Image (tube, rainbow, N blue to C red; front, top):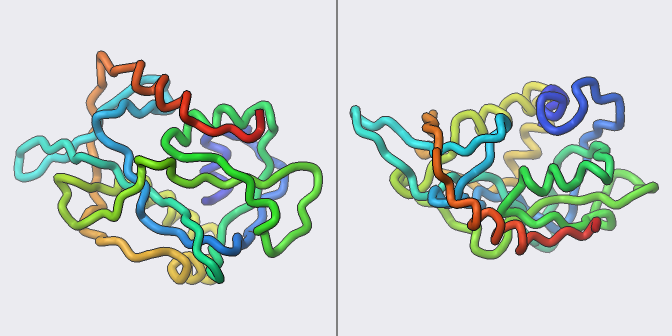
Length: 204
């Protein structure tokens, strides 16, 4: 991710802390996280929306929105970014990363000696993993999410992009689509409550 992205998201608008490219050993990245469309997904404005596609004039609600995931793989290494999040703010990240499990990876960072606190990463919870195919009625990668990755390439440069491509499993790019959003007036909040109850939070 780029510094601009984290400053426009959950961190302060003018982040002054460390922001460093780093590597995580024994993990590989893949397009295997799937958020089912029947679950409400909270947006930055605090409301819930459903994502849909317009295909030949028809409205199509894909079964899953597909995102990046990391999985254990001996002798593999992925690149990423290290930055500091106040411990009191971690619950906001957990809420944003519903469907993922936050877990400690301090001992697997290869570039730096970490002091003062743990390093966390996120991986898909059981039940949120999927090997997507090219059928857009089942699987879609939001174009806006894809652009966040492209912005990171622009920020960090060609070397970072090359490392990302080498450490990330392939995906059918035909499922990258610009989705539309419609306000979900009566989302089932009990489903989100159940999901949060399953969330493992090692910092509390």
